Length: 153
Image (tube, rainbow, N blue to C red; front, side, top):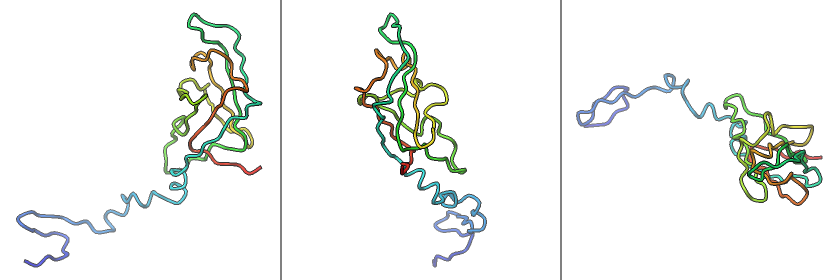
């Protein structure tokens, strides 16, 4: 039996329906993957905190040895990448932060942080939520990785 290209056919007792390109045009995933979306999805940049900006406001310790208050750091010459319309906002999932190589839980980020500030990204951390024993200082190495764009100064 010759195989044709008909829209409805039976082969070996199985009936198959083929949809034409016009019928499925609205459901093509490739149409959603614009260059802007592809560039956003490919972003996975790493930047280091400016050690001269790292400090905190904590002064008291709890029974577990965690310091209260907040710490902050500035990542220079970088901005959070704008999210294309075709993608849902990943929120804090767009980036990961590490303090001295240890992953910082996203629940330790102060609400609405990290955020762009001119040509930099500012991050504020709740010290107790991050289980920090001290405020951030110039001896800490902070890195941020994710959907970030470098800014040329």
